[in-house]
Length: 313
Image 1: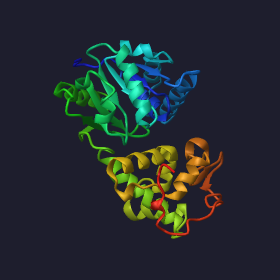
Image 2: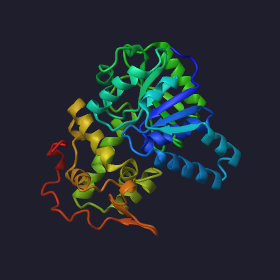
Image 3: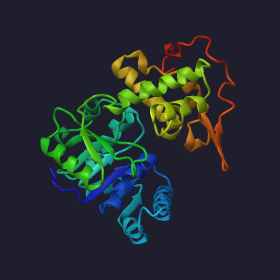
């Protein structure tokens, strides 16, 4: 297995994938960002360019460092480019079948000693590894959004993962300015096992009419010293991502704390996915952010116990 990471391939060019790619190029690593769904990859490069420009404007990054980072970045749709990488990180949609299919295709192109990592936030790593022949080089690498800013990376080795891979991933995380925490093969790792029930309960509290989004978020920010309230955080993560984590963790653990509230399911089905679509628990307008007045255009749940609904329904 490789012991030093010089080239990284990131598959998936959404907010998480581009954030991981940015963290790598800012740390001097050649990075190939691969748009897994095909189509024009230029939007992914523009997202990283805008993020780097904001860092320069805020005085957090020098113009020369920005230019060097962009020189190290390539964006493509060619999955075969993973053959050039020492570390391959898949950051595709949180769906076990889709991730397994992607991992098979990655392994077909990857060099024999390359490390393969998954950025899954809620799926069992051992299940994902069933798609691979070389499970000793597979490891969970869970970044947090925005990945170019947030410091934590949860490292999740499975039973077959080589200890050398874990050590190399610790060094890699530290090289890109992250703090690695080894968790093991547990759905949701540490953070999401605690965070997801917190967000879901905040949604239930909203459903029950206890308070509105702003009141809930303000109370948790000021009363518990949280930098962001749970509903604003859900919008930031993406309500589709929260929905997927709820569904996957409930399926894996069978714990009712992870069942999906009715309101979350209806927002996702309506295409209101949070900040990235301009509407979720809040409306994100050019001049301001405000509570979404359409949250309860459909019927409010008749019972406060909304978790009885299947998250897959």
